[in-house]
Image (cartoon, helix red, strand yellow):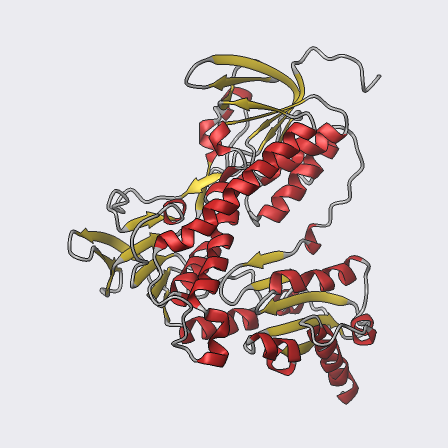
Length: 474
């Protein structure tokens, strides 16, 4: 069959949602010469990632670090601040500028690759290969040989939490606040990635922060040593952790200033000027009328896919946050690309075990590969090489002496099995180790590498030498 022969459909691919998975999936298909349409509300181009998630929250983090003077405190004292009183407008100026610029980048990329942006809300119909697209002015049906679902998520909410109150926020709302001074105290309900990122920002701004998490530990997918080191640093910054605690009710009081009261199952009462509810996200799959095409949803609204991101309906694929963990922008981009290559019969290598994770707390965390608990359960003989950032000259220069780089490697073959980093620029540093792991490299390769001096990358050589020394001492 001629792959370029005309088809009875309006498009070769229709993409639902323009976040990282949809955006990169659409461009990948366009590069393969396919007719591509991407359906989203024009104001939402770029998805949650651009408007309320990854881009604004990470930009906010940089604004916090700059205006609070956080990075300079190791030299000038814990009371050092670049600006004495930080207003939310100061923080959001930088956020809004970056959103505008990145929106233009995405818009330009789609135009250059000939991807048609279709304004509206998409849902499935009883007809095969057909989507209904609804907008305030019109409703129409479009057909496609293939469909990629990448409609993203929204914050999960509890009905009994008073979100209508000005001092109670979900994670999308928190980034949209534009007026007044930053709250002097914040209760963060949820100790996951998003909750901890915002908790660390608030602490850097000088707020009293309390994190309430129903589990007895934080970040179960992160190496335990790294998690403990993060908690130590956050406690030093003024964060209080209430682990194994459940919020049973929340009151929003009309006082001056506004306050919230969180009642815990244990009987404790927490009082603060603001409350951020950061307990997970809900896929937008419930808005797609999936029953019309017979695609079931998992209990929390996620879609089950195979290794090629294909749903039970062969011509419908799903990628990004809608398929669940790890729900990262970087992995969503790759999932969208891989799904499209599979649907059009193109070869693509998928190595999910070597996808990096970045958690943008203060200090940040990044990792790739396996941690000690996983390797112990798999009965793999391993050794660990450590580099404390206070041993690295560049970290002393920049003022980050609390960081840690941890290499895990096979005790017999010396092959690198995991990279785990806490500290400034962790999400950049991890890619050095990731590249070595992609080629099946060993810790000896890092021990023999000459890095720029001074540089944070030098921590790799310090950690490699530390690990090899441990083997020699055996």
